[in-house]
Length: 406
Image (tube, rainbow, N blue to C red; front, side, top):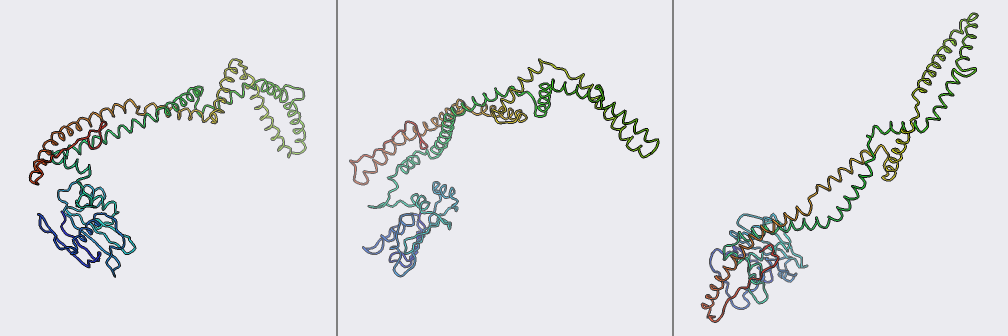
């Protein structure tokens, strides 16, 4: 309900304050040119109608219009204000200014607002009936709300909207899942193919260096055998071997020590070198005993390592990185397989649809029954207006698939 209207420097009005204290009917009367249409025009602008700079009173820089409304009981308006963080308990104050350039600014409850917000709220505050003015009752949304209010179905209508949006969300999830199904299936097949190839990887990252070293040793066992035999020959088994020469050198030094004790220093060096050569000889003999040429093991290892390097090249991963790559592929496969499939989503959609239809059917029944009562009441009221031959008829148009409003 409009409680107050204030106008400043608007058209020909310098300053006007109107307060409506009565809860009943108020009439503004006056002869032609008294300014009644100016008040209606100002009210239209505060409700979101467009204007230009000509609305500013001559000699003034700007015009201002404000209106205060009592919104107790107007749940729809309160909801709109709350959704836009503009709510103030029990009251709604609209304010708008205009300058000569045609620019305007708007406020709702003291907070800057857009013209769209002003219009969205204003249409539910005032219903202007005129030759060129909007009539709220001509809008289908308002007609439906009037019917629901008449039959007491306002809460049921809100419940239908909630159930519809749940169903819509479920339908969107199904559509999304179906759209992604082919891509997911192809990706899953590719991952499984990769994982199958990686089954050859049975080692840990720490074990690979040992495998590579064994493969290298067995692949070069003949070369290593020849090398060890050559070492043995040079150190001890050949003619004029290193150990023989070391022994001769040691005797020469010991002979010299009889004449000069300073030779003791190089004697110790030769003796240390002789000990090191003995260690070399011991290593060579032990290595000869361990150097087994296992043909079957080499063939097996050769095949295994070749497969590992082939997989490594294909996936562009070094062999030591393949175990971790295999684990990653396995996790991705599990992730795809545990995604909600379209079947389970379809069941949720079906249940949401059932829940929606259940309450929507109740609403449709309530509306259908209420329509007949409303038709009779309005038709009877025609008689009071000397239109007894007129009949009021309401048409309910069904939606095959339903919607947020039933």
